Image 1 (cartoon, rainbow over the protein chains, first blue to last red):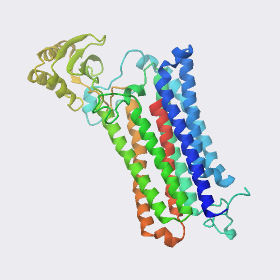
Image 2 (image 1 turned 45 degrees about the horizontal axis):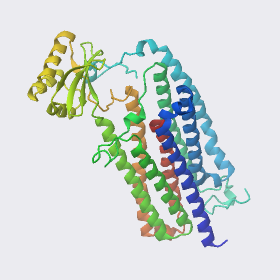
Image 3 (image 1 turned 180 degrees about the vertical axis):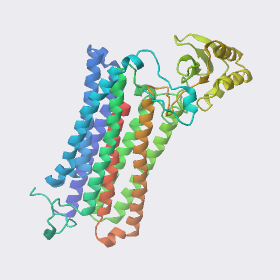
Image 4 (image 1 turned 180 degrees about the horizontal axis):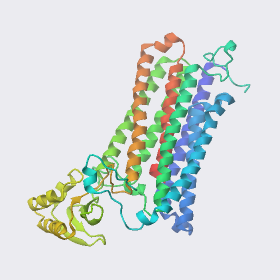
Length: 139
Length: 316
């Protein structure tokens, strides 16, 4: 393979990845615009549609991340050892996601009575303007 | 594995080239890994706080109501189209990632001119992105014309009424949305431009001055009967309160997009330094353009992080 052909090949892969990323982003953008009216069109409950939309966004994001890391950052063409030593530590992140999702939900339900319903939790004015505040802001 | 080209810059055979990549590239990878951990923690904190807020029945901010400003569309045509601008920003960053790959590809062919050209485009894309972010932050902080001042009672926590700047008029509303009094445009404009948390006495004074005696009188009643002590915030956002959702929302927005923006900015600076080296011929003399590849890794990482920030802050 001469240098010329190699260059065209490399560029082809780049443009293909660009196209995929653009199409996925455009689709996400479209879905974000339509998500409000989807439940009416499909006749499904609001919660089901919300869950499906969120799931679609997350999956598409992972797809985009895969293309950026694999093609643009060239990791897909490196040795398997390098790929694994980069990716395997992210097991800890998966663990952290699961843990914090459970924790967030639990803590929210625990404090629901104090900070939920219509009451808006706002910090006291004098404490906000004072130098040192020991108030915890719940949000 | 058979197709793998041996990287001539990797450690020599006697040094057992475990990973077939040069020392510099490996270290860039491991740096990016640690950086990815930092960003993951921030985004997971966002997730945890948002889920907590949901479990408390406290509504989180709706992105379609938050990010509505687009240059020209807003200033000239007064249109507030949600998410258009952030779509453009995302596209700018993806395109600058593409020009970066093209620079790396040109580096493999050792075409100095092309590398320089694509590096310059990448720098331009990064700069454009940072400027877009400045615009976005400005409108996030200043807020919408319907952002409200919250009037606080004595204990400093109870919200008594809302002072709402509506287009052309200032209205004092109770929590059922009933308008108690309205004030003149001059007053509205003035209050809109105030820094957050003006004193309630200051507001009463301004009301008199700007021909909005009804509001002044009502505020005075608030002070006398409810013990209104202060006005918490205008529309928009600061670190304590915001018009969009729970305080944690704005705090996370500032921290995460700010941290990402810092990365973009340093990326722009680094890319520009590499561009200068390219036109100086440093890498031509060195015989390879691996440095371009290394900053390329960093730049793609910045794009990668934005993909996640885009999803969690702007779409969901």
